Image (cartoon, rainbow, N blue to C red):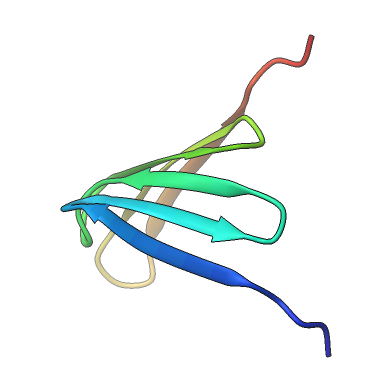
Length: 65
């Protein structure tokens, strides 16, 4: 079983800093509502939980040069 590291810090109300071994990300949004996440790898994710087993998520990757 591999050893993993993951930690999340609340830096402001509605703003979280998420850290793991290789990357970090910042999530902005309320606990039960639409959220936007920016990752150090260049990925931007927009997500929203919907009632029941439904949810919405779209991910975009920054263009590589």
